Image (tube, rainbow, N blue to C red; front, side, top):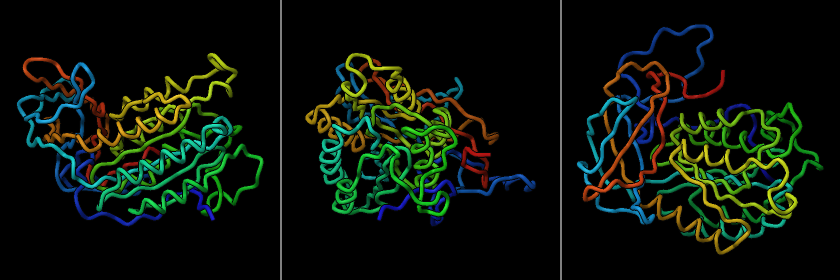
Length: 349
């Protein structure tokens, strides 16, 4: 039986260890609560920014062996002092896969299942965990956190196309879809929002979402900006495997198709990227291999922000790296939310 993700927050165990991917928080005590203050979802005890990133040369090759002096960081255009710089390829990884099971994926779902299974087998190491969510007219949790690729593979094989013709469970009690007030089609933004906020928010270490979809959202309660904000507040890197069955969209350009630009924005703002795989199984497998290489060839920069005012506002980060005087292409999230200790890390009211 498939367990659906309800709109209400999922029960998650609190983490005692500091989160290496977390937004900086203040050591000062939290402000007095007000009647409308939301409940805290996490806190850590140090004021720092941990920034995971990958670096490529002009030909697109990943660059190993960089040192602290090769990179510089600015926050809201103010230079920052780097406290720690290291290659990070062994830190535990928490991975979520979001699988599009809407009608537009009818012809390519078998390819997605096979390539996804191979990816889980290749990428999951001893201390890593992953979960699987499908999204169509509903957002459904097919497999909760596990280190077992076989469990994830079995869950993948049970994924089915859903265009809304069947009857689901009751929303809000763990048996039905995320409630949708507008006509439903493909609730992609809702899936990103829920996965980031309810599954990855309190996880520690490196965190990534891999979305397999044509990127077309229809009927989500959440907007694109809400999905991006949820991912940023949970410090999640978003990768998109852009799978487009042109025959479903009438050949050429399709009708009203905007999935590409939305996915480019979602990936860029969170430090990931979009990989166009079309309907090719070989391109799909290669895309998964690229993501695996990036996740295992990351750097981590830590700095204490010069602006110590934890006001909950978004701070823009600019990270630049050079090698032998040449500018390198840096892939990193564009910023973070300066949340106070005990502050809410959600995007809701």
